[in-house]
Length: 152
Image 1 (cartoon, rainbow, N blue to C red):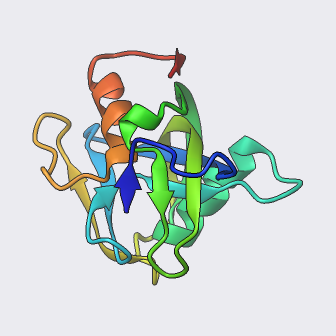
Image 2: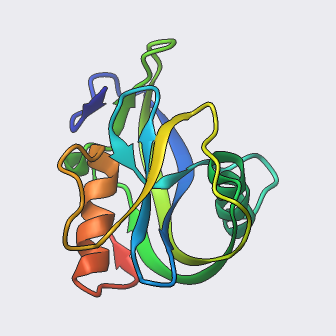
């Protein structure tokens, strides 16, 4: 599903968002995705006419039922070497993901997984699961290293 090289130069670029959601104990909320079984950040595509911040807030609400407040930005990620070339299993479409990754805190809501998730769980930053989707790896490492405003 994830790759690091383009096969077709006509591959579509897909702009999206990802959110490192923190609880009161500074644990990170990860989502085990139903499409691939891997853990990743909540997030997704930016809809036409939507701001990046609104997309992040909407995607988190849709995927977790939580209302969040954006508190920072980790960076913008586009490097294919980070596994950002994705082949979607449902239709075979290939996309180059370019994501803006934010940090956020929970304002309200009762956590509930969506149809896109198998499981939602909080993890300590120093004990993340090993089965993490490639596009989430670099932002999580950058967050753990205290980096901000990364452009990759």
